[in-house]
Image (cartoon, rainbow, N blue to C red):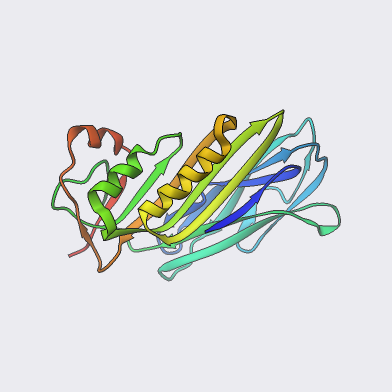
Length: 235
């Protein structure tokens, strides 16, 4: 588990999305969000390890508290997982914040949205929840158990107390779904009544082998899994 940081003053740097699935050589565009934290005022320079940003220099102050900039990246030609960084630098080149973009390059798979039919051979699942709702994750834990793992997971928690906004971001790799839930519950309980936003995103893969067999979901469970994306294993 890695808690990136809790911000009190400076700038927050977020990517939408943080993880992208792409075809070899595909041109991608990610939205970079630079947000003022506390009383920070100054020029911010964006520096990327790969690709180009729409604006390298921008002013962050009371009038420009949130600035959005496109980041254009070309996916590598070979399949695999790639990580690219973007840094927000302050005056004198001081590092204010760093964010990570994960690009997963794969050959195209047959993917669908919703709860997979019973018996489907699944190679990947992608769960994204942008509200305080652990039920979709709990359903996957109950139905798949230890047969799957969270190959990667990103958790973002925002809270506000006495007018001060705090952001915590947690990034996980190869954890059980039950462990991801425990970490989510810990941070939700820690924020308590000051919690203003919770979101989490998981890439789920078979623990062993190339695929896992989908179980039978009831109608109630299907309702919670409407936004689940799953990809069928190739024959």
